[in-house]
Image (tube, rainbow, N blue to C red; front, side, top):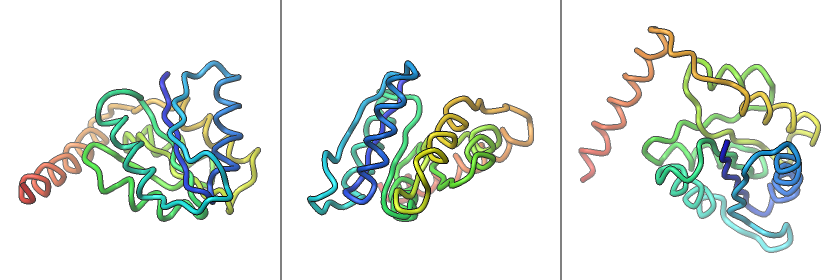
Length: 154
């Protein structure tokens, strides 16, 4: 599976750890930056890079890390086709994919520890969308909202 990952400066330490662990586990990982924790950066810039890769089909799933995960989630959900969720527990990470077809996991690098983050990431990446009728119906409704809103802004 191709995974794209990005962070701002606050999420960099966790992002860096996750990049290394995912590569060790055999995932194809595209690291979109940032490249250090010392230089202040803005999470919307890196959310945009991650969204572009996903929208172009360059990755199947994305991970976005900022200090709390909140800003990352807000920014990611502004892009068409992106379904991002902030998850700081394993259940939400796999359930978000299984029920809601979540394709971006947002994490708070200042909120959770590295071992918890690794488990959450693996739950997210191992999960599959259920395609049950009720989940498909809900996803269709979300897609219709997105189509309507983006058509209105053209």
